[in-house]
Image 1 (tube, rainbow, N blue to C red):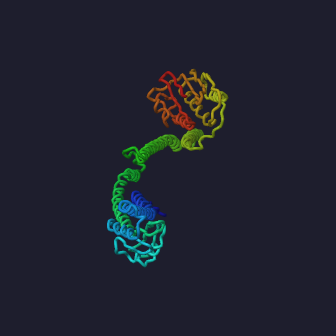
Image 2: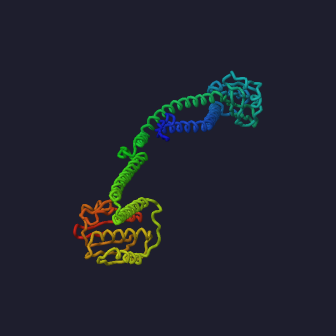
Image 3: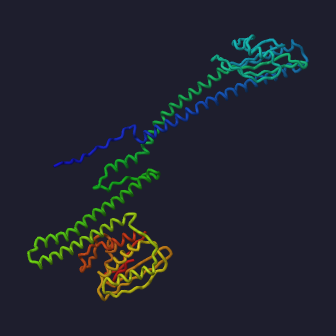
Amino acid sequence: MKFYHKLKVARRQPGIFWEARTRILAWYIALTTGFLVLSLPLIVHLILFQVNLRVRQDLVEELAAFNSFQQARFPLIEAQDEAKLAQLFEEFLNYKIPEDDTFLITIIDGQFHHSNPRSRPEILAVDSPLMQDWLSVNQPVEGEWTTSEAEIGRILYLTQPIVIQEEVRGIVVAAQITAGEVKEAIDAVKISLLIWLIVLMLAALAAWIASGKVLNPLQNLSQTVSSIDESDLEQRIAVTGSGEIAQLTKSFNQMMQRLQKVFHSQRELLNDAGHELRTPITIIRGHLELMGNDPQEQQETLDIVLDELDRMNRLVNNLILLAKAERYDFLHQETIDIALFTQEIYTKITKLAQRNWQIRARGRGHLQGDRQRLTQAIINLAQNAVQHTETTDSIIFGSKSDRDTVSFWIQDTGEGFAPRERKVIFQRFTRAANNHRYSQGQGLGLSIVQAIAQAHQGKVVANGNLGKGAIFT
């Protein structure tokens, strides 16, 4: 003999690095950092562009200051000689103090004259290639000179020739070394990056705390789901707020409500089915145990056993039908002519028993439905009416059709039912309290009718009073 043991495997709780908010935070940091890394070259390029633009603007202002100085002190310089031009340059260089890394250089007749400040880097020496280029300038030039020296970088410059008697006699050069400006800009970027990193860390911490609060309902949902089993379906989650998580919580509570209803219905079905099956089994067992050797007695016992087995078979078939009613393939729909269908049903139900059968109305038009299932439902209603009436009672059948609905009804003049039974009359294994003649019935007929009606997106309604008949629509 082999023994099989059911092992309960403990669920491994996810680590902190697998939590939803950790992954959300990781994505947040990764995306933010990625965007910054991708945009950093553009930021540096824009900063350097602004540095060049500002330097060139400063150089333009330096030359504009020279022109203003000339107009104020030497308005007729064009008619003066070289001595007057040298005096102009001397007074201007003494008057104008340039910004840091900015150099004002004057040239007379192709020879270096003076500069402010007087000390210059080697790249601006008298014999340097850049200075030699300036000595031969005969028109305004806006230029740029690139060096490999880190402390120099690039040199931006503007030149303005001084024309005396239609001849270039002097040149004013405004030049600036950009290494200092670039270094300040890069230092500002570094400080900004440091501040950004600190802010990112603080934002990540705040996002971690905030996401924990936001995702707390999901954690409660997970804990509730983990604690639910088939014996406890009453747990619900408190709904707070009105966002997506609140909607998810509402949907979960609604799902639990439906599950609880289904489990409760299934439990009642099993209990009721077990009770209904226990009776014929007890009858069969009792008769078999008491059966003797008399052939007539054996035949009577066999007839009883077969009858009870038939009853059990009908019960099982009805239960299977109710179970199938929830499946998508329960119906096989077709187009049904309402008037012809009504006449067919009436012909069939009049054969159920001796009653005063009547047909009052026949609907017109067509409907989409399962002919066999609808026939079964209406015959069940007619059989129910037969069980609650006498041979002298009347049973009326009819149908009608509106724009979007079709109704069938069975009305009788029998014993009816109490108003309090209206809410439970369609429940499984429910029988009318006053129906003593058919107390051994299964109580599934009206449940089947309801299931077929609901499968057709419809409903069944019962109205009546005790002793005044009933009508089922």
